[in-house]
Image 1 (cartoon, helix red, strand yellow):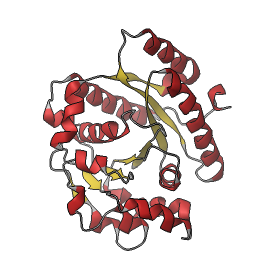
Image 2 (cartoon, one colour):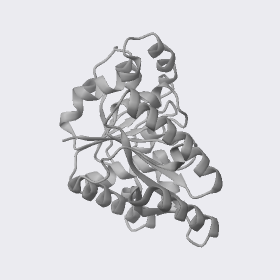
Image 3 (cartoon, one colour):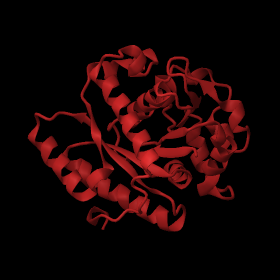
Length: 268
């Protein structure tokens, strides 16, 4: 069965796009068929996959507003060997247009149903806010992967996000759960990092991925070459971390772990 994951956190700069691009490439490296859905008008996941967002004829905007079929908008990331449903600035207009459309929270869900059978994994790169696009992602996915830095304000943002996930679980998408929390830009020498990490384990237990993504120059450089870090520098710590994360996600799926709804005191 196709697994659909939204990579979400309303806080910007936590590594959502980096995670989408590099996890997609790492899953492909383990022989999985992957679709990356760019749901951010900035189009960073599109560019980071080596696709020029300014030259696109059709994007996810056209699909969400019923002007094109999903299959006609798919492009291939030559570097990462996965498919991309690309985005650019046009997507900003979709937010407004979707408000007056029927089933506005389920537009993406209907789109993904057209193509889901062709993939093992679909990853959705969400914008850094809880808007109509993010709502569509949360209504369409099975689980949320939350990348976060281990810093003081991150915990505050996390509890707001969990509140939203709980609401959507109750109202729109009963299968929605927290798939996992990914610690990014991780520096174990920092005492605050260790404190926040300990709190995450206390509240979320094995929902916290064992894999941590370290601060890594190669990981930061790769997007400017339109490549996943696995292609840019396979030996880098960033590449090794995302391969490990892919392995962890696949193992969890095979074991059917983490299928219970969210109950955490942080959510209240």
